Image (cartoon, rainbow, N blue to C red; front, side):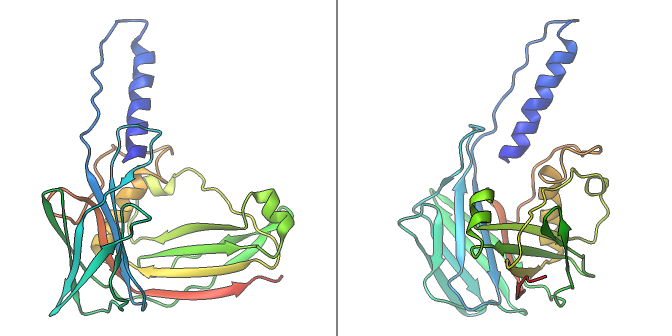
Length: 269
């Protein structure tokens, strides 16, 4: 939402420049009221799952703050799992037990905080195998080339070149990551989106891929989010609008359940 507001103010500024020589106009630019946003993705991995709960800010240069004091529980079938607040990290809540989310279950996330009781539902979609990928030369280094699959998915790619301290110093970090999407929609904003940043890496870089399945509803959420962020700034931007949410009573964000596949490669050309 912060990025959306940035473009809105920039649009007003440009419009003011265009009309300033013809007529003086007073613009009443109002900031939106604050809101809470939640983020949770359940996966088919045995682990402590996490919910993050944030509060929006009206300051363009201020990061969202974590919301404390929430009661959070996950309900599916006859089971209920509660989430405990991490005292050292405001806004982060972790399940009290490790568990595996699985296909065939309908999950309901219930959040109660500051007099608000809100609910979101999610079900897990199937996943296809990880696609082949390429690593090609890029100047004196290398870069990752993503190939889309046949079904909607989200793929996180993590790079670790800790074995090359000189490149760590040059890059400013020993790790980096990026996210790729396969969506079964055709958007002119996607086709003419600004070029994304390339992450170059040296030999002997460790590469971890994590592919997530996407339900139809989750895919629509990601599409809307991309239209407001990564795909904005191209030749054919769409009119800005609120990113959808599957919470029902005022909390924004998205609750999802995804199957995950992971592989690891130690790149040596």
